[in-house]
Length: 123
Ligand SMILES: [Zn+2]
Ligand SMILES: [Zn+2]
Image (cartoon, rainbow, N blue to C red; front, top):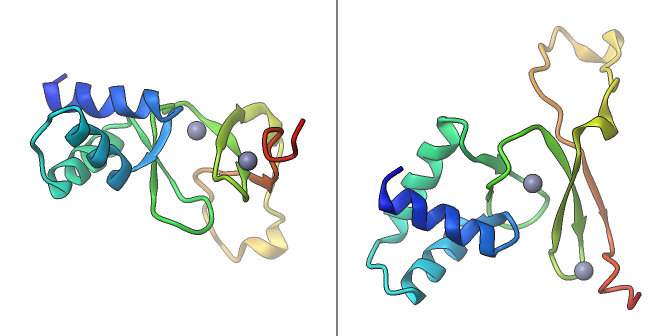
């Protein structure tokens, strides 16, 4: 792992595992790192291509990078933007009916539950 990659992964851990390239860049800069947003973005994209990170699109906002590269799904709080990992088993057995597949070859399934987290609900 290069120092750049180590820095990026450390930031993702601090951000509870999911962050945009902009968020990672800002954190690296705060920590005194001198890298451009383009370099951070390229590092994140390269790590995703290698299977070390996952790219996550969860509704509005930029693509997020996910430090958990294993198959899993997400709870997304629509009020504070918090993202929580949930087990892949939640969607096990989910099938696309043939009459709706239109010849589509499914490679993966991403399930996102939207709602309000316990903190926003005041629990
Ligand atoms: Zn929330
Ligand atoms: Zn995740």
